[in-house]
Amino acid sequence: MSTEYAIEKRDFVRIHTDIPVRYKFLSRSIPLDVEEIFEGTTSNLSGSGLLLVGKIPGMSWIPGLLMGEILIGVNMLLPSQDVPIKALTRVAWVEAFEKGSDKCGMGVRFKEISKEHQDEILKYIIKAQITR
Image (cartoon, rainbow, N blue to C red; front, side, top):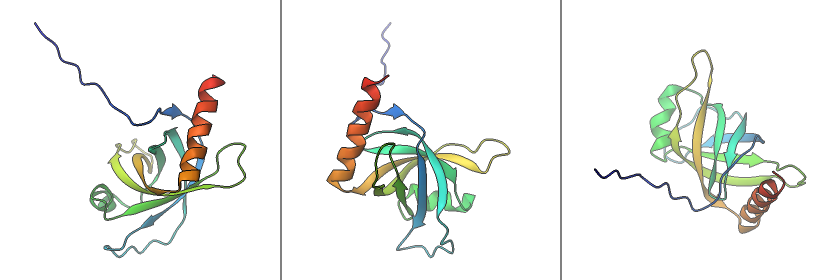
């Protein structure tokens, strides 16, 4: 009897961390009637993306998010940093909403991020692993 296991391949190490994130929904192809800047947190972070826990304006937004028609601009301040990390992200997946909650988890991948900001994230991750 042979059993195959799927091996998850990641480009970067991922750490569990709670960092406040401010984010905004952006789209060139879909008119968005929400200009609000939302506040959420990371659940985990890597050099290629993060798990963002926050609000979505409505369930009808999920297809646009998953198809890349709606992107998310994120702004987060890593502990001990003075300059916020800014990136444009694409939603890879959405976790189910918890019953009675208006928040969900969104796995987002960095679509546009400066090399300097990505390096800051990687330094933060390495430091977090060393001090565990």
